Length: 308
Image 1: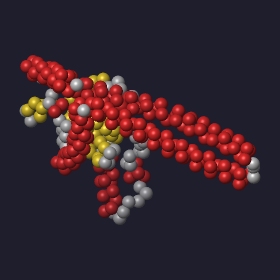
Image 2 (image 1 turned 120 degrees about the vertical axis):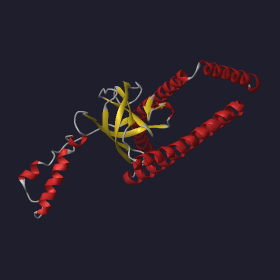
Image 3 (image 1 turned 45 degrees about the horizontal axis):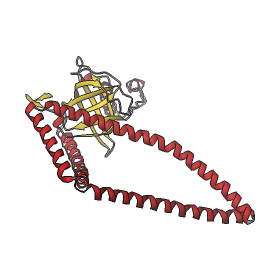
Image 4 (image 1 turned 60 degrees about the horizontal axis):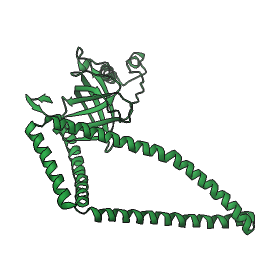
């Protein structure tokens, strides 16, 4: 928990979103003024020099002015796993930071190209989720310390939009679970029938496409090479064999990595939810824990006795 305006707030109670974001940050040296930081001083010098040059008749090829121009610099930041709320942000990184460090961060949310620039104070630094697919060993949690009112409104509106979308998805998922628990036999039969219909329709479509391709290749080969029926069928067979081999190779290159990414995504989601549930469980009182356990036992017994 963190303390804001002399009131303790639980970070876990804030609505947050998990997504990929481009994050640029650098640590602020508390012994130096931000206005005198190395990345801002050249800009101020250039501004003053340009004003002087403008007053005397425009900017010319002045070596002294060009010497004050900042050197070119290439920055490439990998996309990070980020969760963000109205009060702070957590992200994975390579650098081990300390609680109390100040950061100047620029966050670009890739889903709607929203950019937020602000300063943050590090709250915690711990080992990253091992299932996050970003190769960064540390998870940093920070809170915003000087978020402007306009940026705060922008962030709140974005989070509210995400909250509504998540509410709709969670509502649909909850309705599906309730329907499955209320009518398990009908739900299972409907799922099997739908799966069988989709599989049958997909196989029929593939068969029609294969027949159309074979028919088209027969006419093309016969027209180009003036071959007989048997020769045409042999040539088309080997052409289809090449196509099938290329398709299988493409599936072999695409399907296993996609399955691995899907499995890693599920593991990361499970790890985050497990950590959140354990934290919420640890915050409950002994009486609340006993009540939750009794309620779960009663609901399970009632469902097993009346529902099945």
